[in-house]
Length: 416
Image (cartoon, rainbow, N blue to C red; front, side, top):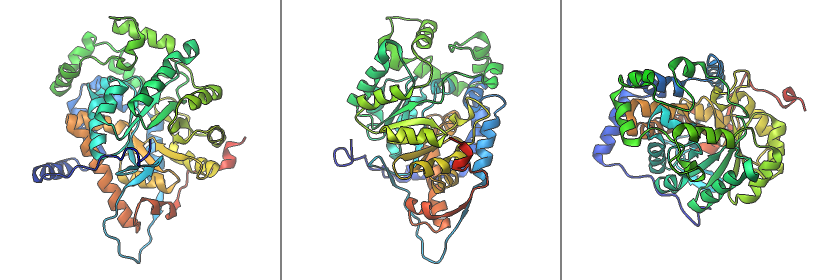
């Protein structure tokens, strides 16, 4: 699917009232961390801990942030720069900014109905939205809400020669999904202590403890009354009719698990006719192998620090990945984005775009349905200001900005 066949919808023109509301929100919540603090106060504790926490004691989340903060960008002056545009192209399609919404596991636990709100906001802003397979809406519904910007993420469903996984690919193709994302960095599920301490059980169930916790958050309860308890809607047609939530979770545990093998990635490459993206690449050798077998793009990510604490930070691994694949693949940076400056840092270090997940959940917790659109504005405005301050006329100019990146891994650091 390319621009000539299906152009992306233009960004909506704001009315005077909408512009006033946007400005008021920007004054009240000018950063992602302002939204985080607002969300902490408005959400049930278990919902905040689920969306905000990571593996272990959040060590890799903190390291992702610190590594991004350490990247310095040297500006170039001497020409007149008007407020520059932030539009870009990914896989031949135009987007309003090199910013996207990353796949998020079980976002409905953090904020009921999250997927629909995220899809609508991404469509309105014309940035990519990656729907996760373990979601609260079907891919077909997401395609109705975000027809011009929808990407789709899959985990490994290998039983019966990938019967479910390949049928999900078929459905995504029919729905008009623009890019298929295969996640490879979750071979096993690790423990997230903040979730455990908050009382979350797997499968998710509103225990008495969680119900009492939820009573402190009228906004979350109202969202739950509208969207219902999060269920695995995308997979419902593969399960027995009227299956309970517990049995549905058991079904998924039987069907889904492990990381895609290279042979399986090749199988999905054969079945999927659009751009194929591999999510979770941190080693240059894996990047080279993926590109050699026809993968079009790579998510350079350590899963946002939510799987294991010992991984390299995503920004530190990024330059070596870019050096390994050159211009043969589109690189999506993910893990730790908190600002438009972070987006600029990622692109200057080798990415084509930067996606965020956690902060979009913060935005929902803080402002409900208005949150994702507001955060997109925060990131986009900050990115344009950063481009202008650096002397960049557009996003592509970031590739020519001199960087100082003290934590960057070199190709030889990875060995063979």
